[in-house]
Length: 329
Image (cartoon, rainbow, N blue to C red; front, side, top):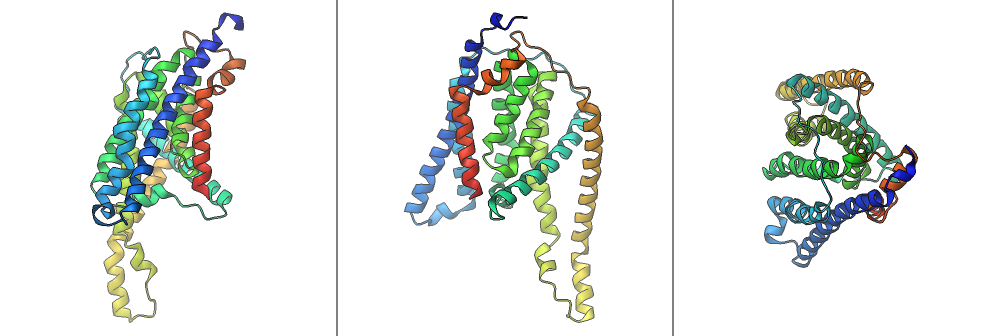
């Protein structure tokens, strides 16, 4: 088909509005967090400003309670085209879970190594430090609200409004923007990979609950299960072990930490099994992926320029890249 039959300027305006919507979400969320931090500093960090519950509320409420609803108003006027509804099935769901485990840990390794290399070993994974806090609000924000609202934004809203230009391009945009939104290299690569998985599931099923549940399970494993396993392992006690202590005390110490060490071993073996199974399934599944053409499918040679080279998307990407660099130094 001749490229001249495509209304590329109109498509570019659609993607620009999507980018502006995401930029608004980041700008509003970070702006409100900055204001809260300013008042915390002005107050001397006393009283409830120092409480764990307040830190969680200040970190996530501006984004989830205010920024996302306001930012989505920018995207709301764009026409939406939801995928056909189909069942995923428990078996397929478990397959995608295993693939997600493989991609998550692979992406995490890449992101951590690259962050350390580029920062000279000084970069700090702030999210990893945050999830060490065992306050109950962690479950509310990280395991419930984050999966639901992020899936609404990056799968439901974004894909419904861009899939008519081609599923592959829409899924890639969903994954790229989802990875960039995390604004740090530690999370970018695994968030990008998981974003592709979630996008594919939503495009094939048309049901957001599948991706929201998978997203919630992944977050639960990383933010709740993993810190709990490390806690019961009593790593601090092992690090401070004095090998010169009397034999009876040494045996007593090992008996005390043995259950935790066994729990870590069991958890590690399960993860290794999931990782290997996910790798095998990924190799098999990636060859069978089916991306449907959209009703306004973009020509291949113009797709990248149309999707990413516009004011809204450039603003979003620059915003995120600046924050990524800032988090490295």
